[in-house]
Length: 108
Image (tube, rainbow, N blue to C red; front, side, top):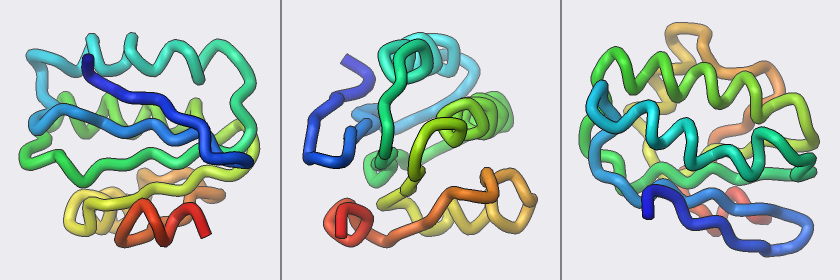
């Protein structure tokens, strides 16, 4: 399992369970997001705290996913400060994405 989806109304939480997001698993991670990409999900939290490594393919995949996920409801990103800071610096976060240090913070 690459992602665990849970409901914490009004939020759907997508918790990335991988430690690496790279050219080896980026396609599989993108496919694992299919449940929320193809069906309206309302408000979504993407939890990234397990990620230890992201290469350029993983970064591009994450950027594409976030752009698609941001079209429905609120989008909160939690748990990986350096990665999210880098995406923000590169102007690759969707305009409606909010960044939080922890999942708990993102849900409140």
